[in-house]
Length: 118
Image (tube, rainbow, N blue to C red):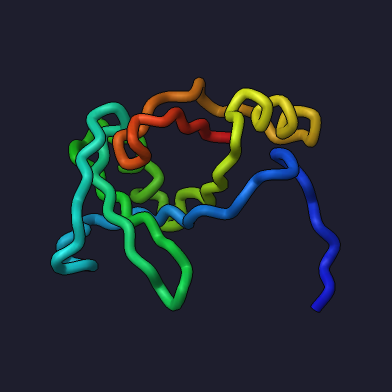
């Protein structure tokens, strides 16, 4: 199938993973490495589902931002892309009608590289 492509974030953007909310990583994935991220107030673990990288995301307290989303039934939280320059990617996204939700923050699961929610 030959589909038209959208270039929202820039030419060197690559798909990375899908983030899915779970109540307990241990109930979904036994033996996975769990990474605690106090900035995001979550624990995460990465796995592969039929070749698709999935980030399982578990709230670590009732103050976690994903708790309210989970209460509303939201399980798929995000689609993550890797970009060479986060600032340029945010500018490109804005020109394409995609808006920054929160200022970039460091993420422990990614070696403390900055991530952004758009």
